[in-house]
Length: 375
Image (tube, rainbow, N blue to C red; front, side):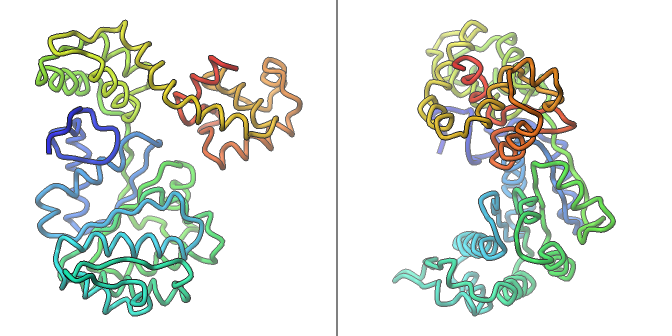
């Protein structure tokens, strides 16, 4: 089905609404088809999920492989990981008919109580976390299914760095052993925390050391975005100026989701026969921020005072360096280096801020703009 708005901000529709990534698509396809596992690393909202689903949509993959995509960002343990993986496999096998998912059910015996079939033979997944009694045994069964599946399998695990925070012992070694002996499955380990992902795959002391091909995902080029945006405006009898696209791209450093979100809003605000110019960008940003302002206000209300103060300081700085320095503390009237360090740790854990090479920013750019404007 053709979307009302061609600038997609969630999910994946088809290659028509996917901007560029031809080199990255070719690289990822080549690695997978040639039997390599891949670690795909980028900042959040750069388009990892879209790229993976774009590759899964390629006929060389969709016809020859079972493909599964799980986001483990919200998982806190191996049990939750297994729950998410099991549910995705059941859902992912549905288009291939009863035989495919019956093979899964018969192989993963420890989960049989949580999977039933309706009158038309479609599986219903009603497993709860408490049904997973022996995590390692269930994981063994899942990998046994992958190994004996009729088609080769590709399993993409997004926010893979999350496993490093699981309380379960030796989780990296356990997963590495399964992956290493899984000849019928290829894996994409996608992650947004570069430091953690780098340590997992490039440190000689870690189980996944040198076990994958590494891919870094950067911004789509500005020229490709200009062509993409103008093409879709033109198709709907609308126009967007080159200068407007450049302004959006530069303001949000080419981060895919923000560029798409602005283009989506501007496309909606531009009438047929009309032209979208630079002077429409600021009102569009205000429109987006206003739609989130209740959530933003509630978030600030719930934050402890020291965390709130540091969040405001980082938002006002834009890109904040040396947070614990006397200069930064004095400029933004923070209390002490120790309180900044404590607040910084919690804000990073909660994903309110991002930090790389000792440079920090607000994770949600629109939230950062709202804070800077209102606090």
